[in-house]
Amino acid sequence: MPADTPSTAAASPFDAHESAVRSYCRSFPALFTRAKGSRLHAADSRSWIDFFAGAGTLNYGHNPEFIKRRLVEYLEADGISHALDLHTAAKAAFIETFVARVLAPRGLDYRLQFTGPTGANAVEAALKLARRVTGRSGVFAFTGAYHGLSLGALAVTANRAKRAAAGTALGDATFVPYPDGRLPAEQTLAWIERLFSDGHSGVELPAAVIVETVQAEGGIHVAPADWLAALQALCRRHGVLLIVDDIQVGCWRSGGFFSFERAGLAPDLVVLSKAIGGYGLPMSLLLIRPELDRWAPGEHTGTFRGNQLAFVAGAAALEHATDTGLEAEVRRKGERVAARLARIAALDTRLAVRGLGLVWGLDCSALGDGFAERLSARCFELGLLAETAGRRDTVLKFLPPLTTPDDELDAGFDLVARALGDLLRG
Image 1 (cartoon, one colour):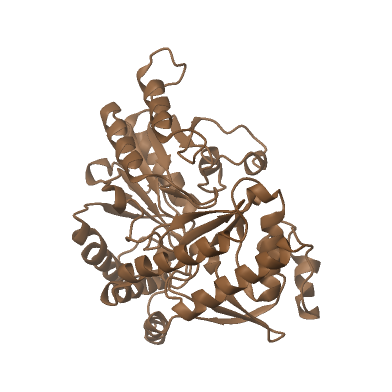
Image 2: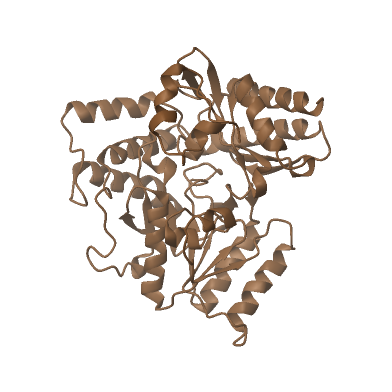
């Protein structure tokens, strides 16, 4: 990881006073001052095409006008800014918009639980509720999984280094293979079936299985649709709840609003965060099948479980996305990106490409540890933000705003091709 070397003297307060835990600023050392659309700008007049998008938070780009206007109007009218879980007009409008524009067209029926503002807190709520409903404590998770870094979410996160930071035992999780190519997909399901069915497996029947339909932090591994459908059927046969973590790849990122639409799923619990806040504003949401909503009042609470500005921005984003046909645009752009990445990967036969919609990865693992990180650094030097992901950070991950124009998508991948050529030439 590059040294923490801020680009201007004005950045010195970070070195002097900010905790060593900071990370992204080490990979992207600049003093950012403004952003618009799919571009970021720094104090020294440099600018970058953004294929990072706040780690998937800024699906609608930076400062989109259709949301900004709504926020400004709300603030100028002295709209409520903080309300815990009180009834507010902003919350009512968000709920009504979400139900009408997302759930009803898909024939889905969920209760909405507004958790603390982080995705990890919504994961915590999902795990707690699954245990409360089933009376069982265990959870099955997958190799390569990432669900957050608070203790419950961390227990179902696979990365050893991140788990070690807990400094304590992380229990009640059993990890099983994800269909990432290391084993045939059908064998991973047979593994789970055996553990569920065999009274001598040594593993108790769990409360839930938690899954990402696309492992983004795990290296852009896309679970097959038939595998996902079979996993849901397996869980239902055994009375195990299925939790889908759609924090990073939901909100149209993978094509449909939910990443599991391609598999025809109706999960028991769904976790949303990141882009659901519309403008980069923090909000997290747990969707609960109505018969599973067995919380006692206040049983999962938090001071910031009702971000009013995020309700306003989130409702505006849903309206705009459905009115402008964003879903079809993401699929069209996804095909464009796939074709472009195939040409880039042809520069070296050791490269591999994975993804769908507008979440993609260039797997550089066969070129050795550190190559993808050097590629990310070179992209940054040339004017593109793209982070690494996967085991040993060997995948360059692309999460452009869903609203990125075609010419900026092309320009961004031109920079990737140029950076890759520079490294391959040595």
